[in-house]
Length: 402
Ligand code: NZQ
Ligand code: ZN
Image (cartoon, rainbow, N blue to C red; front, side, top):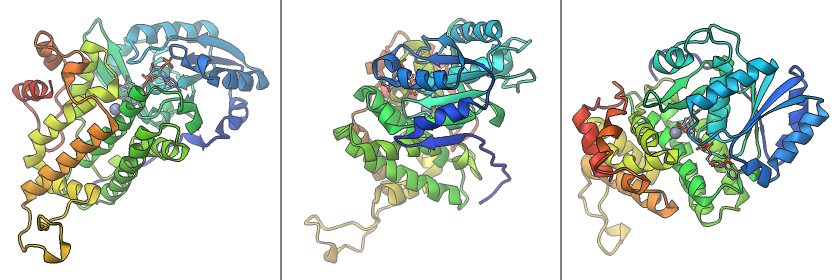
């Protein structure tokens, strides 16, 4: 383990089928006016809205409705939420939904009383709020982003032509989050598996960095193995509570800052994914799935030791060559090279992706020869991970992803 870090995660989690029972007691900690932020209406169809409304009534709150947070939330929508917060002197933003709604709530919280241009301040210059912010609570309905226990807020600004992430500090983490796996059972299969890949991507993008022997990597490998196991079950039977509950818990730990302790991070797959999302409005997890294999094959030689470790510890790839008849007792003395091991690890990843049914090509998401350049231009290149890409390499990876 190397480096210095501070770990501080103030989000209080309530997990399980009875978790919503804690909402009223949490609401009692805040002032009288609650802005209820949610998406396009799924919570009205699956009963979650009624459960939340009952808790709000019981706590005697005045509710300010704030519907229509879209997937890949826009800055325009954020400004609309800001006006609502100011006009109603909101005491708490209760975000009920997936990553989009919770990210949006953080953006509104930090921007409502911001005297500068919030887009410039937070998403361009990565500044820290110097104005009052509004506390946030979350009821999670879709698993993947980890937004329920972190400071991430990814916003799309179509006018400026960017989809950008800002990671706020612990003051803007949800103060509390309600995690009931049953609330996620109505998520359509496409969204569900996109979320599974988003989790895997968060795990891999923190894993593929650094050279030190680090406890954090061992924790990460355990989470990857649990995700692979449970996602196989859930992809076949989405109503399997145990698998869905495991995945919900894994998603939270995959991106609540634990796994970056003592590590750098890569995050280039997310930057490419965000550029695809900006241009096509495609589902976040699928954008990552479509570019991951070309990306990792591209950087594999730069971080070979970690790709070998990934093959061995996550996928169980063995060094020894086995006889074609599979007779373990008669193993050949020959052992696979590091390159063969790493390649096999990525082949296992590919196999798993096909098994759970994610999108394997960016063309399926709307990337075309015509908009390829636009996507490439919107990619933020980060000087981290095992290799800093050039603009040409980004284009090459995108072409391979199609
Ligand atoms: O809008 P509604 O009607 O609620 O429908 C949503 C939406 O269409 C639907 N859904 C959610 N819960 C449901 C449900 N449908 C039926 N039953 C339920 N229980 O699912 C769709 C997708 O929801 P969304 O919130 O967009 O998905 P997700 O959680 O994947 O969030 C994606 C956003 O999070 C950002 C992404 O970039 C993207 O903008 N990210 C946030 C991060 C963070 N905060 O740290 C990190 C991630 O890497 C990611 O970038
Ligand atoms: Zn993500």
